[in-house]
Length: 470
Image (cartoon, rainbow, N blue to C red; front, side, top):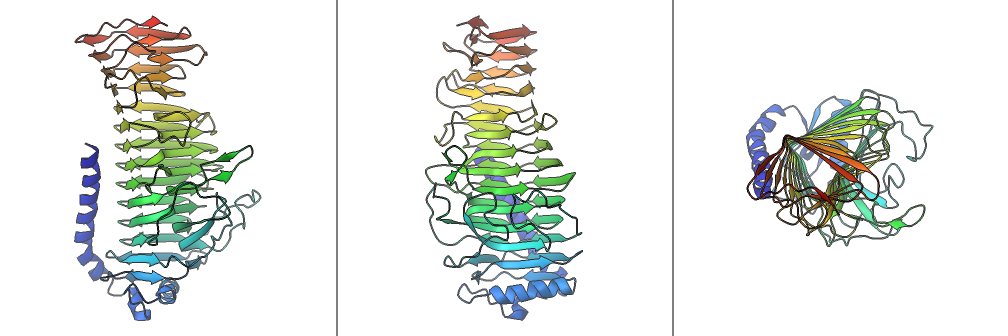
């Protein structure tokens, strides 16, 4: 089933590109063509200056910049850095051209050590002119300059180099596909391949639309010194969103996100972090794989996150909500979670959710396939309710740990066993199971501080429904 989802995304992306090639050519006859400025796209010639000149010309003339596909790729030896004026717009269109850096070049991020202790090699750096020098400059006030960036049909590759997991901060360098610092960001029908670091970083934006984008082997994970210890949570996201403007709206749909693969999973598929005002985010029809955390929000004043028809596999935590206000919420609909094994880089797991003061969470019409090790624990702290969800325990007696939760109109398959099904870590909790169906389940058990309340159950086939205390 998981393979079908990935294949579906790739086929959809391929058809869009195929249909779009003729349209791109016909619609961009009057566009600024990078080849007219000396870009060759032969994989040998340094096309950096030609592409930069074409991009700036397109901005000054308010035209689209066209980067035509070649039989090879456009090699660059420096960051493609663009500073947009007030009300400036940059539109880049391609029919599948590849931009690829020389692995030997180095160019720092325009924000020093953005969210990591690592120097960033940035491929595209596109932003408006007014920014703080450090993200820690809390006195800086984000201003809307009515700038916009649109990239359609482009492929961005990292260098031909293998990177090991958990490098040391301050020594190694990472890569960033696109660092966006405009008020509006639109990225469609693009690919990001083999990027050890970040695919897209969005900073100080108001509106973000990412659609039909493939992230293949994008991410990584590095050590960085924190206040009390060294953690393994420094970098490695497909999409990173930070310091967004008030009432920012983010829409991400029809994307495939596959993490950079090594012994450990990459850090995060989509991150929302350090957002000081309300953020509204909708994530639809996306596939997440090989990320320690699929979607993560942390230190957000208030975030309203809707997740619809998404698939999560090969993760430590599918969703993580940390230190955000209680007004924050995550609503998950018609999504699938495939739990297997933790990679050992995070405590506990694997689980659908890691929630530490992250607000309200509700699951609706979801599949939770719990094929993780026998008797392993899956935290559901902070989950208010599971409604019309299906749980498959594969006769491995997975254990729910944490807070009080309601299960309404759910289906439990091959659940229960000798060990506890509900575990409270010593804190009294209530578990409500209402109008639910049990199929081939062994007895459910809870520890002494768990009170399980059952209403209108529908047992089926070899299910004793003996809820007891250990």
